[in-house]
Image 1 (cartoon, rainbow, N blue to C red):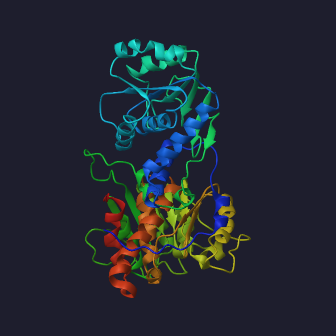
Image 2 (cartoon, helix red, strand yellow; image 1 turned 180 degrees about the vertical axis):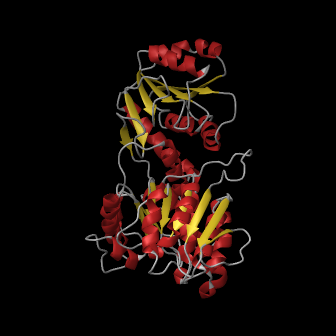
Image 3 (cartoon, rainbow, N blue to C red; image 1 turned 45 degrees about the vertical axis):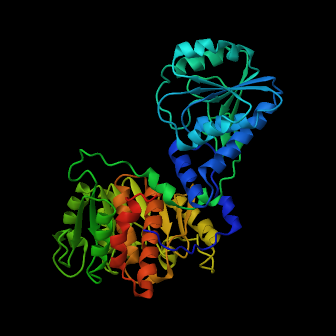
Length: 480
């Protein structure tokens, strides 16, 4: 589904929260996709990478250049570099010529056929041996064989290609990172380094592709196996209700729609929702007298979501059960001092008023729209708590005390009651399979995006339950 989007502006000061240091393949893939959504195509990034590689080659003032290209985007980077090196030197491209190429690599190879570059396809070690003179006479070799998605040792004929490059007298420049087993005199890392000793090359990725949540973050979701059984998607326990009976059920439906297989509602209030398993608690409020039962349920669950609709009289029970939760999302009325914490991973999902209750000296700025100011308060608070905070607002702030991510999805109509309960449930389901920070980032993005879709159709008449039905199409259905 395509929904119109009006994103809040992100202040230039947000750059202070940009991450540095080594980046994983998975995180880089997410950033690349977010960049494409922001309007920068993969080919644009490849052109920038290719030009930067060519400039690195020219720094050695070579007479002969050999560019080794694989079938993926890394190979496309090398082919783009070759076009910038077609004048003033002897440039050859030796490329793997079997199997499928990435679409961008196909595009770059087609462009090379009209360039002043010698092309040498290879499919076997015998082919490579006929090209031996290319390796011995090259002053510079560009390694664009295997990119960040490579795992395991290289197979033939790539292994022989790497050995021949290592044996040559040429300087070797690695595109993004060296192929396994390849020596490198210089590593040109695009956007962020993937290995130590890299030189960072800016290829024009918008900073918001990394600072803000986006569709690329969904690539971090683990693939579901076709052989999965009931329960493999995770079991979530929702503890809530009493004064506000609908809240835990909205959280439960959010968890189901976000992929949890089994969701139990531990509450004194029953609502006839057949997809949810009701664990009846006697009385009209959750109290410490329920602790033994809640602990048993929490120990069996993968994730607990606690606080939705509890009211003010149940904090003792929350504190009693918290240490027995492996992973937990604390929301709403659970966000009180003393602050509960799970045994392994904890996510707190406060709005501004709730954050003021739990953050101590780390108070928010007066301007609720100041995302940077809110991040400056939330980041040290999360570090002190040893937890992830999803601070809800016009721009959501997610931080684990080391990293900060901004989420700009959502709509003002989401101020209707219950949307935060849905968000807590979605976070709980994702926490079954993801680390707390990543689960909170994706949950904020997906719930806000679903809210945008509802707002486009229903405007101010939105219900929190409307959002629930849009969660799966945002989270699991890949749109081209």
